[in-house]
Image (cartoon, rainbow, N blue to C red):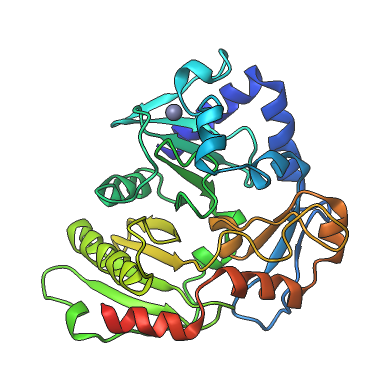
Length: 320
Ligand SMILES: [Zn+2]
């Protein structure tokens, strides 16, 4: 499939000059100084920043119900550029993302226009991770970075853009909770990451049913600590597959906020709107000035602010 994706990407780019230019820009960012690691070399968790002005519309997207209702859904086939094509995969379509954050960046919308919601979709997401082995498949919750919260979709990026996610040595601690005990048939392990500026879950599973059970337990626990809201808890989810170990590794990243206090266009503010890519360690800046002044302590402060705090995270573990 990966080879097919390369061919598909190349054929799309040859037909779509704007996307081609954006992909060139993102590929150049690894060498031209527009992508910089800002954590020090000894840090197990890598924090980086990326300057890319083609993300401005996504970063400033209005995702409230009224704004969404007033615009045409850009993931529905009728509203896409006519030269954009897709590859059918199950009840989804694989598209290239014309505003990429990685050398390969895909958007995978459902063929139906239906709400962004993870319930019942974990088996699809896991199958997609298997299909796209070597890539990071991710889900932005409807209130955590999805710019089309009204149209179910996943995204996938190539591994070079998400170093922490592919770091097998990322420090983590197993969560031994009676309700999450491993059974003999298929391995499922639950960890918390101990190296990141904010806490999140890491799940290793071979069995998709057990993986889904574990993720939905976390979702229920998050709901339980968020009073009165029936909405999906704020979170980002990332998945990858390794055929040698047959393990699906999943990061479930609970969120406290969509955007940080410093978000805005005014002097001293920053146009930074964290979604999965940011929570995996790379802060995307759409203005040169924000990129230049973003330092490690500010970057980590933003990530801590929009992530869940440690006390709340412990409460979630207690509810599992
Ligand atoms: Zn749609």
